[in-house]
Image 1 (cartoon, rainbow, N blue to C red):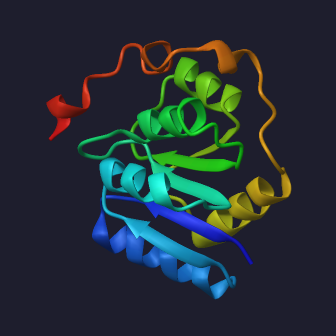
Image 2 (cartoon, rainbow, N blue to C red):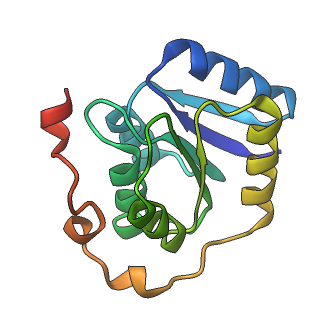
Length: 147
């Protein structure tokens, strides 16, 4: 099955999500926040990134932007958030080939989203390939403001 990096700062939610993904036969790497996930992605290629949006040190949106723009990653990503996500941000995520779902995310929906994302194949470059990191994360607070 797939190698998945799961970035979620809530220890209990991360444990439950990892358990469900492992039950589906996936290998799961776990990161406690966005900066840790970034460090893991610098040395480890994964088939899928599953990340929360709101995390300390580095938001999920910033993580995906870095992964796409700096690492040139074309693997799919799944993102979720417990807060209301503005439609403009959802649109940006879709341009980056991200599957989005609001929290709470039922285990059956998580499994379904992961299957859909993995089946979607590599992300095709769109106009986002010319975006800068600052354009991607426009309007978001800086990572150090969220520590």
